[in-house]
Length: 284
Image (cartoon, rainbow, N blue to C red; front, side):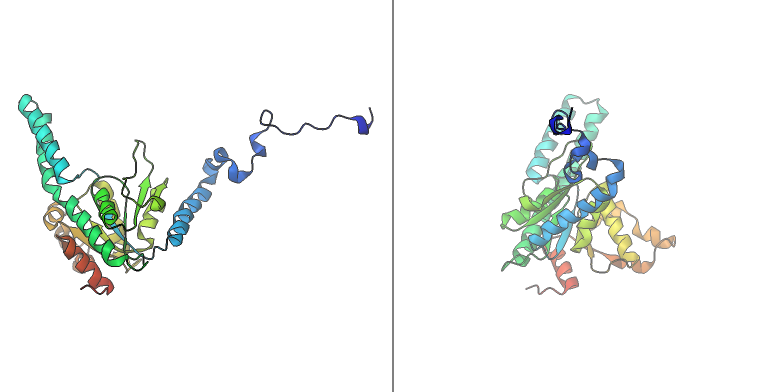
């Protein structure tokens, strides 16, 4: 058979095409390989950065706190249900413990309102005339994070949510500005985005996640890796019961001056006054 009459090579089709033929940037299975981790990390750092620049986000305030603390009305209802269940099963220690926890959570629920009021205050003060300064950023979840995003939404201001993929399903709260709602795969990159533009970290009562971000920020301040962030702990009684700061000093594990790396506040106005004073913001 002559070359002119030879059958042409078959063109690749969806039936016979190998994955090797897919362009690398469109091959999602290829992008999930372990060897591509550095590329994924770079993309995860870059995408939120570019979007925040497009949205003209100049500076942020990080608000952390428990995902398990709800607004007072919801917490009150949870307590009533827990107490009713404990009354039905008087000999069940688990039910009694659940009721005791619900009672404490109702006491802490006041911080939901403080977080919401603070976000409303700072957003209405700083997001004016097209400026996007001191934009509230949270972990994007429920509880105190929801309250902070909600406060910004109350005054039609922008707020950011940095969610994280976890083994159990979770969803961003509905108050985040949609274009500023991000999902991360890597905790380390998420942490970087919390602090890239941060002028303050406001920590409400919370669990491991709150403590993780708090101590990382305090370490950066202590070691001089950053000096631009003011740390405000909301609820002095809670924090001083939780952490014996003076013990660290007395054991020589931190310096007495390290206790100046954070401040206490109780109200939304007190939080903002500390932040405004630290950053030289006019505060009428």
